[in-house]
Amino acid sequence: MSDEIRSQRLAKLARLRELGLDPYAVERFPFERSADQLLADFDALAPQSEDEQATKRVRFAGRLVSQRLMGKAAFAHISDGDGRIQGYFKKDELGETLWEAFNLLDIGDHVGVEGFLFVTKTGEKSIHVTSLTPLSKSLHTLPLGKEKDGQQWYGLSDVDQRYRHRNLDLVCNPAARRLLLLRSKIVRAVREFFDQKGFVEVETPLLQLEAGGAAARPFLTHYNAYDIDVKLRISLELYLKRIICGDVPKVFEIGRVFRNEGVSNRHNPEFTLLEWYEAYANLEDIMAFVEGLMAYVAMQAFGTTIVTMELATGEPEDEDCPTETVTMDFGKPWRRVNLMEEIERHTGLGRADLATLEDAKSALREREVINPVTGKRIDPDAEQHLGGLIEKLLEVFVEPTLVQPTFVVGYPLETSPLAKKDPNNPGMTRRFEGYIRGKELCNAFSEINDPIDQRERFEMQMDHRAGGDDEAHPMDEEFLFALENGMPPTGGCGIGIDRMVMLMTGAEHLREILLFPMMRPVGHVDED
Image 1 (cartoon, rainbow, N blue to C red):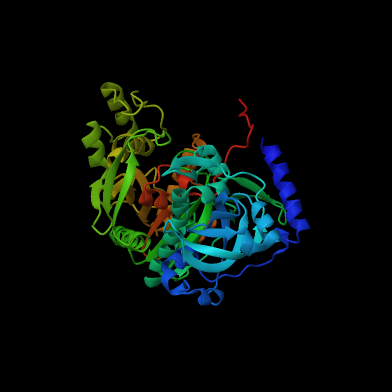
Image 2: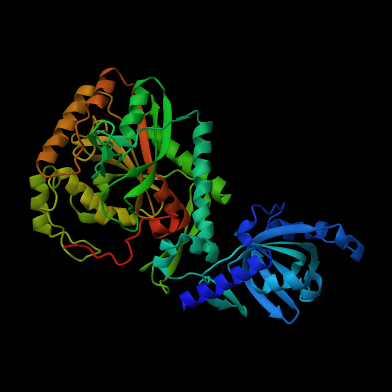
């Protein structure tokens, strides 16, 4: 059927060319106002008499999204993406050639029109078209959606097709379009906030000899010019801190990073990361900064710091999935909780139970702590070190409870190789993570600026790597050299922009706010 439709539309294209109206020969069709602006300024632009119809002309262009023939006249809606306006076409006024051209148009084609504004008998503000110019020919039909209020609306409901053919999603689904374009407004607000705070935006290398700054598997590639293997960066951290070592006190970067790991509703191997570092600042300063940043972004993106969203309470991709309304006020201070205290509150495991890896394994075996999602007990032997086990308990028991904006403070030494040690809490660091809707938003430290301590941490990570942890942090001698030249006390933080947009908008899956998420190729079968 699609081949037949394509052939029919190619024949229409050929006929348009025979008429001297080749849509692809047109290079430009200038017009001044969007559909929404035409409707908003209608009273000033519409002629008040027949004499004014010749002088008060408007031009508009967009995609044909509806079409209704009525003998020698027709109505059609033209959309510019954000809004749409109706056009009225009449054979006697267009003439034989342009009337035939209109009848050769299909829904999905782009067309430019010229005419004057008027109100139809049904009260709809429209353009009385006196001239038209075909601007493109769609060789496929737009996906049809559900009928609403007696009209056929266009929509693309198949989730896989929405992500795979994002151009159709942008055309056919207004809600998806608004969500995707909201991301741009949020990123712009982020940059504005940092500019107001006196930060310098920089760019650091994507290709690195040592991919550090996070616990993740890197993507590998080859640098032909130097005949060396290199890695795509997994973080921005170590290069940004080298800039701090160069006495640039406030730096930030928004850039793509790559982690060769699984895909889920909140993880994507390629994503956009925001990181910033401020000399002479500590963990508490960064907390206040995050609060200010999120309040500013919410105000710029939504016009208020109080954001209301409908969140799924079941499987988000189920069309009939129930939802609940959640309101978050980003203008209020965030709740602050201690990691170990929260684990004890939700599992009953106290500090003594988690003092060493052996104590933790013993306590888990004795109490058979059950994962509330899977219904299975937590495997005490699944993690190689105490820090990993503690963070697993955080993920399973604490994270789902952190719906309102919350800072979780105090993370294990083993999983925080770049954070200062907490002088009042042995085995823990000066690190926090921020959570919204039960998902991690940000990760922040009072940064290590002691090169001797940092080398020891890297050596500890190399021991983890030797023990089979392929996500352990590598040794980075260039970064250590920079620290040895001196770095002031510094606070730093990283926020995944994709995750930030997802959590602020109520999206349930990262792919909803990525314009072009990586999709499994059609027909691809995983190898065993």
